[in-house]
Image (cartoon, rainbow, N blue to C red; front, side, top):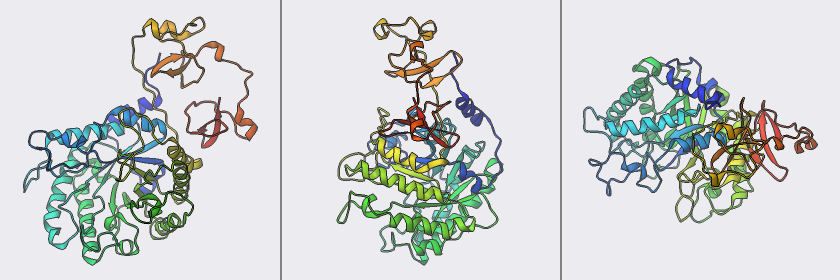
Length: 473
């Protein structure tokens, strides 16, 4: 019985390899499908309630989320996500000037979670998030430069051997916090601050050498926004083809983000999304500058059907101009705050499956599916054994027979399913060569080599092979 499939082996090869593909960021982003952010976790700060001197990693759960696990990332990978943004706040975890030494325990934990993402065979985006020392005022600029250089030198050294599957994002939404210009696109002071910090970030990473000389880097506009002022005054470095513009767009605002007066729960107008994508295309994509929308989302208003339509529309528009998107998931599902939760991190249950379906469906023929197969040896008691094991190959291998016929994986031993969280063998009685795939009546072929369900509707379960939709028996 095989315990590692092709994708698992690929993951191991990625980790063990120091080879860095010398490709442009324009080429790299073509391999990014849909992304997911580990929100309100490593970026959480609880300076007033935690003693950082006693426990450096307690902040990971201080905003209410559980400790992050490898299984969470495997689950997300199985769903079709292949890009994982890891927002990280470093304040509280580094020492005083001039070294600003990052705490070893904190760096180790960040490293573990980066590996969780990389282990899926996907991409990780690591950044600086929720900092106060980089608020975009001129009076902060010189001190912020010193901290930026010190922090990023240490991060770059920590991950010096990682290949193109690890992307560095210099800052998150740098802006004049508390100022009237905070969210309106900025002003000269803010634009200058962000441009100088972006330039220094790129130079700092490049100077560390090794794989970091070819590292793909993300730099934001002022506040990572798409306002005319922010975009028109943004300076993109010349002569470096491994830099990506980082933008955030929660559109339409009243549907996606607004939590006060004017908020709506129905998605019926995509004009704000159209405007955002047209602006990105004209200002960046048409000029050969790659973009990642590092944050987007639409909070829960008990309106999953509308969010499904919104997700498909949004991703279709972004995909049409070659822009991958990373959805924001802060782990919150109910209450008065920003309800951007998508997956229950304790149970790994997808709380809003229609929303995920909308995201995946929006990718259309550009989708690249990945199934990360994992098996663990378990001791099966007689209580969990089905009553009919007569025609089941897996019994001799220590696994029970499946009661159903849904195939999750196939190897040289036979066809495997999953029931009650355990692997089981598909009985020979499930094999019926005369069965007809329902999708053929709709003009779509049957899936031949995959049983990974990407989308479910009233017709049945859909998969994707060779970039085309296919029906699953």
